[in-house]
Amino acid sequence: MPSLNHPFADSLISEATSSDIPEEQRLFDPLIGSWDLVVTWYDHAGAISRRETGEWHFARVLDGRGIQDVWIVPGPSERAAGTDPYEYGTSIRFYDPGIAAWRSTWIGPRSGVVIPFIGRRSGDGILLETLTGDPMRWSFHDITDDRFTWENRKENDDWRLAQDFVATRHR
Image (tube, rainbow, N blue to C red; front, side):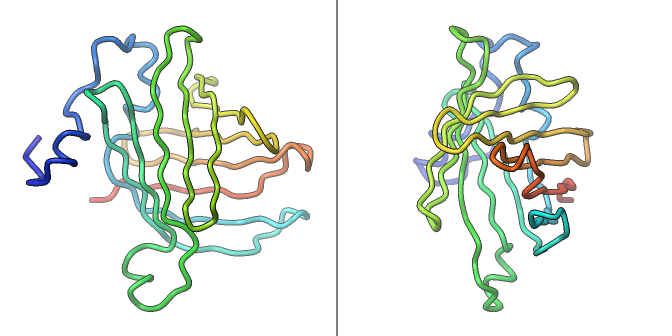
């Protein structure tokens, strides 16, 4: 990987997944790279209440032992045009062999939210479930080389779909 000419970034980002992570547990590797987003929010009746575009970037970090992402909604060009910013946040996750799962933490500074999750394979996708606070399930599914869908479901509404991201690989 070429140097970013910044010691912090060069120390954080890793070119390859650590050999300590078993092949069958490299769940997030297909997401590495940059994605364009269409983000949709749903009301309690299931109708679309809001839709915006954004970006999502994934990279291997911490000597290949973790995966970090940054998502920006709305995207930088919309923000520059004066669109009200929703969030500019990050998740960092690492494989924990003691529980045979991924520990993941979402940090949303604009909304002041920190949410820990445990992530595991679910069929052909990934399911992350909250450890504290309001029960939520975040899932990645329909993952291909060029597209995936992410969903946010909330238990207090009988696992109602609250939000989804349709991601297409940025070219």
